[in-house]
Length: 190
Image 1 (tube, rainbow, N blue to C red):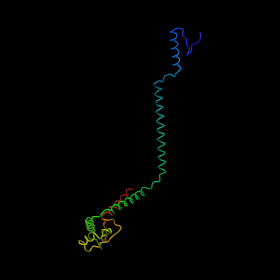
Image 2: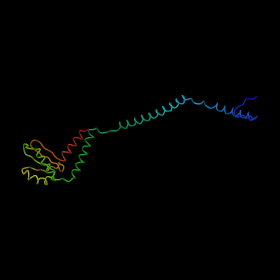
Image 3: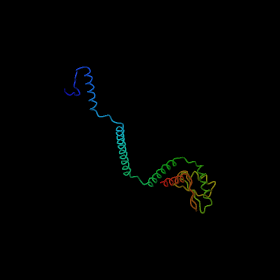
Image 4: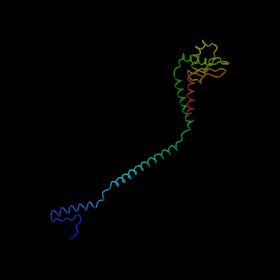
């Protein structure tokens, strides 16, 4: 008798035919790889997950290296120089804004009186310095209350600012003083 192989058809009886079909199916299953055990499936899943995590970690490290290289190539100015440049830009901007703002001469006259009060009984002559456009308008009001006061125009002062010079020093009041204080704070922040 010859040996039966998968695919051989023997049609002797329906019972033999069914046996052969089962035999073919059994041989076909036996040619397939054995089913994977739970432990093997777990190990395979862990290895695949580890490989994916390692690939992600490698990508992150490469991105960090690119960022570090970009930062190393960046030639930023020292913080002090950046603060000085920022303070200068802000001072110029504020000067333009304040320079365009209308000056309330009644308020400016009160600022002048406050600055003169701060100077008090200073030694030597007292000179009130105002921005050129303010000197004429406020000078007439202050001449009534302080007839001996010398008033001069100072183009370095912002409109609305007052500087009282006396023998002991000077008192600065108004926009120029606030701007100078802001510039000092900005430069000191670096």
